[in-house]
Length: 311
Image 1 (cartoon, one colour):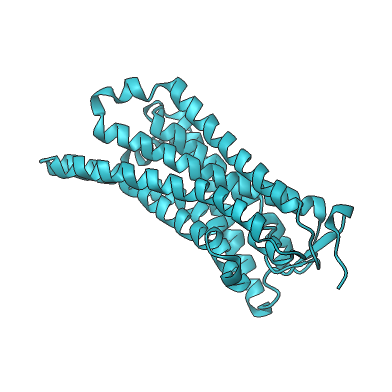
Image 2 (image 1 turned 90 degrees about the vertical axis):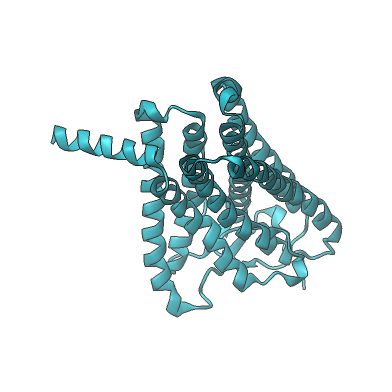
């Protein structure tokens, strides 16, 4: 079998869900609805964080970054998937594929770091309430947000660079977008050396943040358990519960995909797990944060009320 030398501008065929033709129409309808809800929900959170002065707090500053990130993340894969499900065109150029790999990996990695920053913010709010405003200074918040984005793009640059150095055989990617594990399945040569380097990079971007998040929540739990009043307890659990739920959804599916050995990676399962973290989680994030948050709900009613008054 000859090498399919991707460095000379070959393209790929994204198999997508063509193995299950009976599912394609259902998936097309569901994903279109989920994508619309993702755009609407996350855009609403960004707008509310800007318009309502009550939401000019570090927590909502980071939340609007998360919402912007989720809009970009789903947009990096969903339009391509909808074209694919329609059966119109399953081809993608080599450059397009590498760009999609780089962008989706950069945005996913940024989310990993940003969720840590949000956990630190919750830790400061619950465990250091008296110093919270001094500690979470607007300038520090800006620095933390920029660091999240830079860290995510740097991780993606390293992994995409390692991936591009591997010669590939074949041009069929059994996935709905260009994702790292599926690329590695096409490698012509032994990739164990590269995989070790990638595994280290992934462990840094996944395991280290989750350890920090769990550590900060252990501290929060110990403080909350000492709080005698039920209201205080409920308030702390309210602000942290939604973040912890988002963390579990995002990290659970990402760890399944990126931290299992290539030999055990199932492309069919991988596709459905990827649907979860590229489409379902970004759609649920705004719902989780608004349904459990009095400030956001209040801002929403205020703006809705203003809109009806104008009408």
